Image (tube, rainbow, N blue to C red; front, side, top):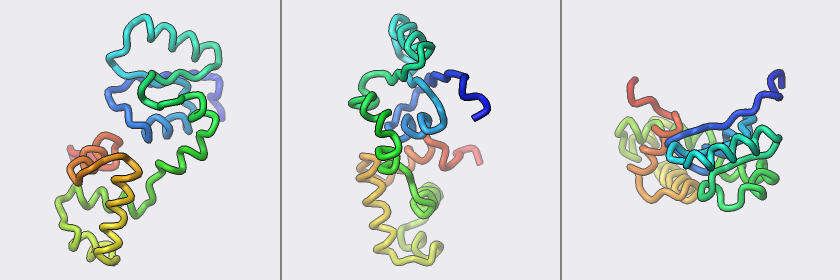
Length: 143
């Protein structure tokens, strides 16, 4: 890439594993939450400056392994277009039956997608899925 020498550290309120791995795919070298201690932030900057990765502890259980196996792990979190569409429709307050009709699929398929999304993202409820969709930008609450 044209700007591969630029070293990026993301500071964010949101810290879903899926989001962090997606950012790593695009060249981000570090990820910290907004409540990081100043001393730890200095450490993160130093590591990234010296061409290492830094992921704040607790976000990814073993960052070194995750980064080395990034493509393999990321595949576990990539959402299909159908899954994204289901999330969008859930956010518009359609019933699962209405979602099935709109997408021209069976209601059981909608439930299967919902179940896989919940398992993949470690989310337990439809409300949780909606919050997740908003947090990662699949839907915009201001539109």
